[in-house]
Length: 143
Image (tube, rainbow, N blue to C red):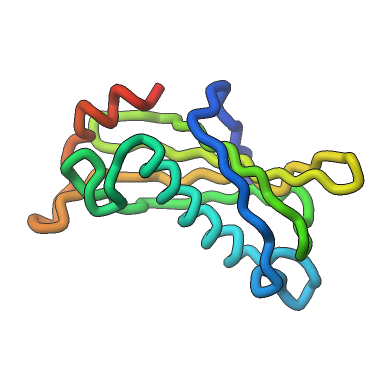
């Protein structure tokens, strides 16, 4: 079976740290896939705030909605790890863009890439329930 392959963009637009909580660990003793997805949501909100947005419902005057997600798991994460999450952008169109994430941790002096992920984002008008163009103010901040 073919596996997804994600590439992190050259330009890092934002980075943050996310500690792994005990509730992020599953029965296998490592960070669960659902926890990674929840972390992406938190990082996305922080990234948008970093850009100057009020939140996902007000991204320079419009909302956003997630159209798709892909996560490429590369190493295990464990309780007590602190993930460094780098954020970039890719595939910018008139109405959509991808937010790309690289999650890593350093353990015993060695750095591990835990996952590379992307969320496909559409600009969305929640009052009309329709996809809309990316605001110019946002386009100026994306590569």
